[in-house]
Length: 190
Image (tube, rainbow, N blue to C red; front, side):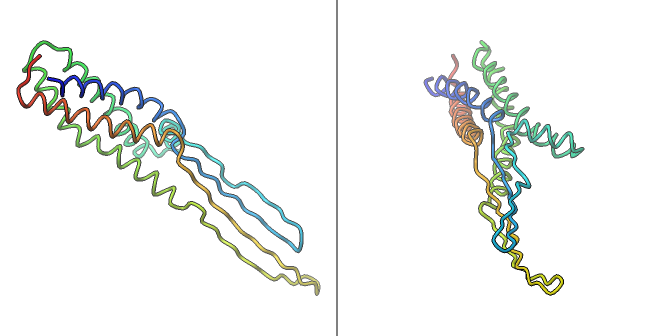
């Protein structure tokens, strides 16, 4: 019986981690370009973004990438919320049969909610460009003058707070759901 209560408690804690996970910065991305002519340097920031899951969905939606926006929203926001709401309802219901059906259904859609782990993997793949640098040294000859032009770019990315909250949500939710499912499938009624 303690597994069911512990599973419920872990799912509530996971829910508390979920909202910062989708609202806080998941990753930051910065790309700078520098041009050095002789001894003078000109730098410019080409991209400077901090994106959360919600901000990413909004940006994809505004860019008319509707399918990707809808998939990220469904798998990273809707399914996790639905799963948590159903588990809370299963916990407070007095009918063991309804509780078992709900937990079995959550187990079935839980496989789909693994897509939120896939979303994290995509963010990590994007971040794998960390510290990627390019450097091109060109010699220009204009009106008999030789000018050395050094063009370089630097890409920096980092995980934000949202990444850690969302990852903690995923892990606690999976453990909590597994404990609840285990308790229900053993036939432990409240």
